[in-house]
Amino acid sequence: MRAGRELISADDIAAKIASMGAEITADYQGRDLLMVAVLKGAFIVMADLARAIDLPVEFDFMAVSSYGAATQTSGVVRILKDLDQEIAERDVLIVEDIIDSGLTLNYLIKSLRVRRPASLEVAALLVKQDIQSVPIDVKYTGFTIGPEFVIGYGLDYAGKYRNVPYIGVLDEHER
Image 1 (cartoon, rainbow, N blue to C red):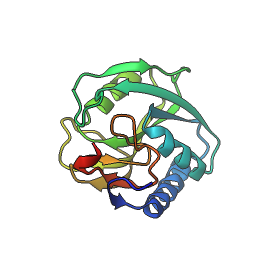
Image 2 (cartoon, helix red, strand yellow):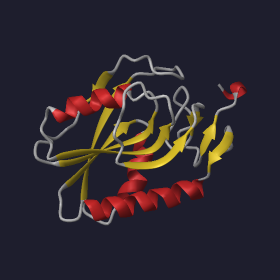
Image 3 (cartoon, helix red, strand yellow):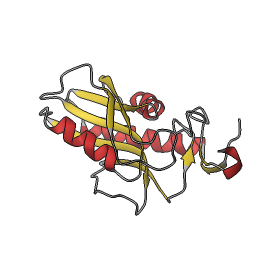
C-alpha cells in the first residue's frame, strides 16, 4: 500500500531502531527496564525497539488522547488507559511514536514522576522540530522532522495508515 509522499523509508527506520536499541542496551545493562508504550501509535515502535534491545524487558501500555480525528492537538489530555503495574523504583522508558507540541508527553511525564520510578526517560522515533509548546528531554531520538502531518509506522490519520511501513506525508486528497 502506498500512502502519502515517503519521508523516511522503512530501511532507514529499521537502521535507526537498531541503533537506538543498541544504545538502550548499553545504558540499561544490569537494570530492570520497563518499557511503556503510548497507544495506539507507539505499539509498532515499541515492538521493533524491544526486539533491538539485547536485555530482558517488560512492557506496559498507556492510552492518552489529545487529538481525536484532528491533525493538531487539542491541548486537553485524557488518560484512557493507565498502567497495569506499579513503577515505583523501576527504570521506566516511555516509548513514543512522535513528539510534536509536547503537551501530551509533558502531562504523561508529570503523571508518572509522582509514582517515584528509579528513572524515567523517553525514546521517540520522531520529534517535530521547533514546534514544542513545552520543552521535553528526549534521551533517545530517531529522527527530527519538520511540521508536516505524517502517517505510517504506527502514526495515523483518523485511525488509518498505521500499517504503512514507512513515514509519509499525507496528501490533502488522502484526508
